[in-house]
Amino acid sequence: MELASQIPGTIFDVQGFSVHDGPGARSLIFLKGCTLNCFWCSNPEGIGIKNVPLYYASNCIDCGKCMDNCPVGAIRITREGHFIDRSLCMDCTDHQCVVECYTDALRFSGRKTTVDELYKVIQRDRPFWGSGGGITLTGGEPLFQIDFARAILEKCYDAYIHTAIETCGNVPWKNFEKVIEFLDWIFFDLKQMDTELHKGGTGASNEVITDNVMKLSGKFNGRVIFRLPLIPGFNDSDENFERIAALILKTKWREINILPLHHLGREKYESLGREYKGLSYPIPSKDKLLEVKSVFESKGITCYIGHETPF
Ligand code: SF4
Ligand code: SF4
Image (cartoon, rainbow, N blue to C red):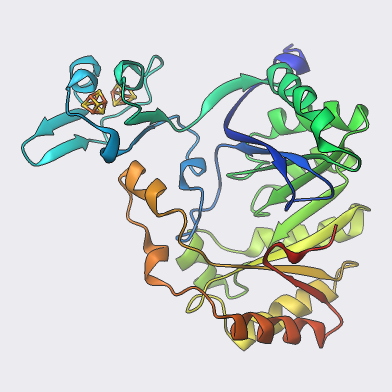
């Protein structure tokens, strides 16, 4: 049987000093892999579990080393530009294209680690959190690699480290059951209550998500703050706010954090060769955000906008 400390996982970032995703200063750990594919996602490199290469054209000098070293001929450089055929790229084990690129035009979109290795990074950061800090697992969907997530949460919880996750909620209930005893807080995304619209915007139904919300309310005794990514034209209807509020009022929690759409992920989509559909949706106005806040507060749900959440 595999030792918990040796369980492998794939992450794509660790930010050692975050103040927006839980109390105090925290290490924010980004796990790869998600069960949704939201068109506005600001971390598209975290959606797939594979460590596919990211390509930054402004650093490229067209030296051709990546093309010469790809074993499956997935890279072509022509007069028209530099192309990666993502259907051919098979996430090979040694990623010679990235290794041979000396200008940093090609980069890894993730890296393999183990519970022990990641825990060493957490211990390195711990003295800098100050009092009340901890870790927050995000992604991607942090419960997608459930054995890895469970092992790291258990290890931190046992070491009196405050633990939180930021989840899309679209995972089997058994994944929540494996981690709730090691969790202090959950940030739980609610996006769109209409099932068909949810499918259109994220690629999956919302039924598992709403079901998990109700199950959590019966079983989890920590703090849950719901999060609503606000995408004008996708989920900013009064009906959606009413239905989200109605769901929250069926639980024992009364907090929601509105996260307005931003377009900062644009370069990441270009580096993955993916279209960024979120660009054609506007950033919500301040008036709209205040209007949404008043809808939730009129129902007794405390509403925070952006990073104003008090921890
Ligand atoms: S190895 Fe790097 S710099 Fe050279 S062509 Fe490939 S991406 Fe561009
Ligand atoms: S990751 Fe491997 S298969 Fe994909 S482009 Fe690079 S060298 Fe080729």
